[in-house]
Length: 452
Image 1: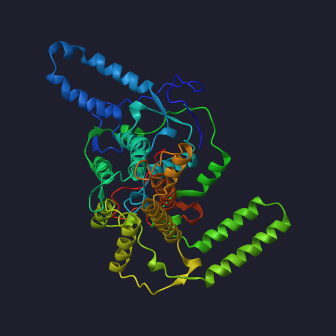
Image 2: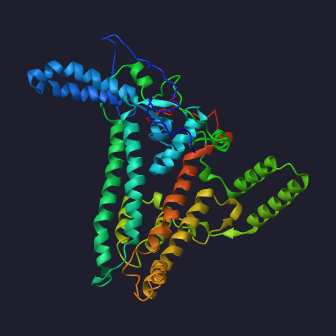
Image 3: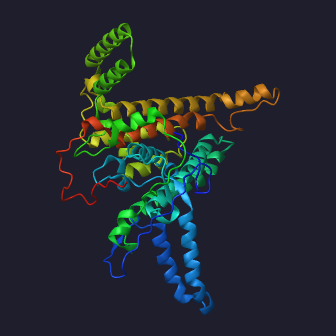
């Protein structure tokens, strides 16, 4: 989705507009807020004021001027909403919203942008001064994830065995261990920081400052437009919530098939093709109703693992042959068993949910790539080694000397299907929205917010 490439006011094609300052009397009541409402400007003030008393007198005398210049620079720097990722609570999620459980940095950014398009904020700009701490943390993690975590994960899965240390443990496994531990530690640290900052008391702000936090600048729009197909998609979905709008992941496949058929008929202008679509849809629906699926035999999704299961899955990744997809399947089936699942029970394919079908696809792809990688390793016929031997005949390059193909082969599953699945679990169809649902339940710690 290309909305605009400019990131500051001085960039080409940006309409200039003076920022709107929020001026409040000194005695205005304030409340202490977390990262959802604490802007970078307010956080800077809090940190700056805490350091000033400890500075030499000459530095203290210049402090007001330095503070004013810093605020001027932060106000002058404008960031496109296209490059900002919001925390789920800033998107309007309450404690029950699926996005709090089923999210990764990429899916969260996609959901943010879909909501921006829906609310008409896709080409707006936010001053760095008014960015909230939550937006800064989520956006920083997004870019770290895309530029560091993802490449390192692919690289870790691509490291060849090189040589055996003892038993099944290879030199390659030992080399990748620090990468695995570093990624795991960074991910857990982010989760803790992201959650704690939302509920913490960081700075005290007035109601006006709280209401303005994280909002784009009025009358300042970046050049570019949102593609019609993206606008159409954004108009059909909104943030899921079990109380008033069930996620797309909970819908049965029959519903998706019918909706897809109706959409194709809407696009089609030929009556003959329309009749074919109707006929094929009836055949598909009939076939799905008669096809029985042992749905409990589909392992639990890794996103639904409890803490112990997640740690076990992570540790078993380091075990050759067993770690990865086979271990996750065993853990997922055990999870189902402890949940009281009846493995002999079946249901029509038409009633299988989107999440169950995508989880099955995830495991099918994962076990296929795992078995291919094991076969290539044992047979010494990794495609990367074969390609190298074709380019450099006579060198007899083996699969334990160059990067394995498994890293690239597994990437579409981890950073394609999983991201797509998380988006579907985080969003719901607008047509399913129930306005009569109770949206102010006593146990909801965070009310749904219309941020813009």
